[in-house]
Length: 488
Image (cartoon, rainbow, N blue to C red; front, side, top):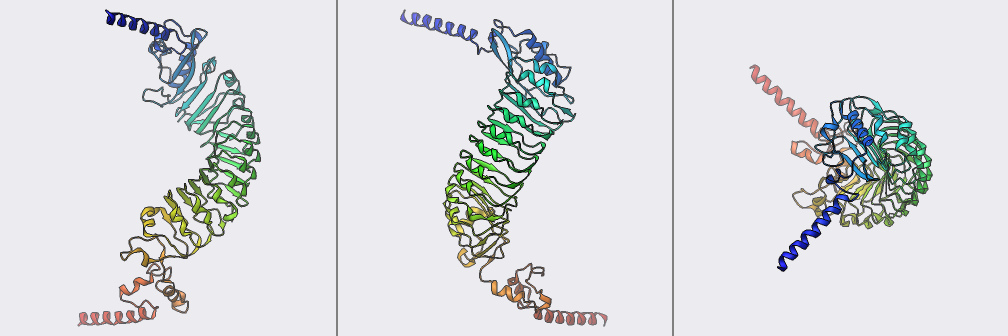
C-alpha cells in the first residue's frame, strides 16, 4: 500500500514538472503549439535564409515550425510577449547539417527586420561572387538588439566597413576576420563602449589605428593583425585598461613604441611582430607584469636589450625579440624567467657570452641565439642538447664554440653548425692571406666547406696549398705514365 502511494505521488510531481517545462520562457520544441511564432518574423526568416542558400530552399515546407518541432540548424529563438522570435542566426558550414550558401548569395532586406536578433554570423559564405556589405540604413535596423556580429572567411566580400557599425551600441563582440574587406577602419567604432572583443584580422584595411579606440575601456581582445595598417601606435591605446590580448602583427605600423603601453597592466599577450617600429625598447614594458607572451620580432627597434628589468616579467612564457637590431649582452635576468618556454634572440647584434644559467630554466623548450656576435664557450651540458634537439640554435656566431671534450667521445651531442673549441689556431693558419691569394682549403669558399680538420682524410696536407700543389704534380706524372703505356 505504502509503495503504491509513493508511486502515485512521484507520478504527480513529474507531471507538474513537465507541465511547467512546457510553459516556461526558455521552452524547447514542445512549446511551439502553445506559443506560436510571430508570422512576420517567420516570413523574414525564410526570406533571409533563401537569399543566402538559394531560391530552391522552401523553408515553409521543410521547417514549418522553425522555433519548435522542426528547428533549423544555426537558428535560435526565444519568447517575447508570448511569441517566438529569432535571437541568433548563423549562416555557413559550421556543422555538418548547417545552412550552406549558394555560389551567389545575397543579403535579403528581411535579414534586418528581426526585432530581437542578438547574434548574427556569416562563415565561408561569400567565396566566389564579389559582394559588399549592405549600406548603413540596413544595419541601423539592428542597432537596438544586436550584441554579436561575426563575418568570417568570406574572401568575396569586398568594400569597407559600414560606418553604421559604430552605431550598433549593444555590441559586445565584433569579429571581421579573413575577408576581402578594405579601406580605413571607421573611427566611430570607438563609440562602442560596451565592446569586449574586436577582431579585424586578415583583411586589407589601410590607414591608421583610430585614436578613438582609447575609449574602449571594457575591451578584452583587440586583434588587427595581417592587414596593411600604417602610422604610429596611438598613445590612447594605453587607456584600454581591461585589455588582455593585443595583436597588431603583420602590418606597416611605424614610429616609437608609446610609453603608455606600460599602462596595460592586465595584458597577457602583446604581439607587434613584422612592422616597422623603431626607437628602442621602452622601460615601461616591464610594468606589464601580467604578460605571458611578448613578440616584437622583425621590427628595426634597435637599442640595448638590457634597458628593461626583465626579471619583473616573471609570467613570460614566450619572448620573441628576433631580428630587431638589439645590442648589448644577453641579460642574466633571463635566467630568472622560470615560466619561459620559447626564447628567441636570433638575428640581432648581441655580444658577450651565452649565460650558462639559461640551462636551468625548467620550462625552456626552444632557445634561438643564432645570427649574433656572441663569443666564448657554450657551457651547456650534453643533457641540455638532448632535451632541446633542433630547438637550440646558435649558428652564425663566428666567435662562439662548444667544448667537444665535455660532450663525450662519440660527438653525438653538439650544437648544430657551431665549431668545436680548440680549432681557432688551425683555422687561422688556413686563412693566412699569404697562401693562395688569401684562400686556402678550409676557408669559406674552399672545397672543404670550412672544415680544415677533414683535409688529412683526403691525403693532402692541412697546412696550406703547398702540399696540394705537390700532390697535383705527382698526379700529373702518374697520368702521363698511364697514357704513355697505353699508346705503346
